[in-house]
Image (cartoon, rainbow, N blue to C red; front, side, top):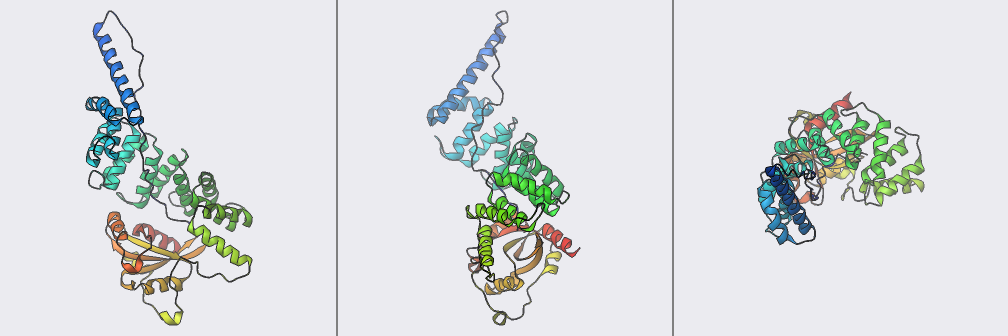
Length: 394
């Protein structure tokens, strides 16, 4: 089955070189002011390179001495490195506020890599209050400059409707722009959209193409889903051995679904009856032990404000297993479950809570009750869930 698209935030920022190339000095002996300006520009460029070299070799005191005056004069490269120094506490006391200040000074000068970093800061609330709209605006700038991670993250914001209502068409455009730059997560996300016809015309052939590109770069969820495609014949002839090979590649990266799938295939090879995947649910009960249920389902989801969020706890293949899961943890009053079709197979998803924003959903996910300890819930937008249920109804 497909996993939900996952937000990826790079955990580093490479040192950004001065975006303006050094120009050859034109020594015009008859115009002294021009010569003075040229010499000044050369001296500044040399100081920047010396400061950058000092930073790279770990001489942070010398780097600060050389770069601070340049940064205060507006040199974008120096401002970026100062932001990095305050970001990581290199030669100065770590200070996220000062780091953001220097990043902002550099970003307004148009470097997409720094604009991406500023967007990441606003998205995570580092050095400032969390502000998704500011993040979106900075990622828009970086994306228009061709930054693939900005294009990917921006696509996720439109997909999830974090600032604007969900816009699958815009998300698909951004994913494709990043995918064409070999961004493996964008390639995977674009494949998901082609698989379900979200923002694009449904096409298993296109989905297969992008999954293959992403899987070739080692992305486990793409490798797993290639296995699904070959096992079921989506956009390609069925091939059990090829499917197993892709499952094995994903499982080698500890991808849980791939391990579960391989276990099921091994039981099938031995003509054993498949049971509930080990580790997907800790407690199982018989129908007699559980009894009838009054757990909320589809209609409850359809009644929720579409801009609100919920948390998906687990996704299981049997309806009774999802009922058992909810009852065993005593969360009936806060939960619901829905049936969704994935790759022609019905899955039952347990949902928990109602939250007014993506941020509040994430905060709730970090403070789950004891009965839900160990789970890794993820935020789902009701508008997206309602759309999935409407498609199933059709």
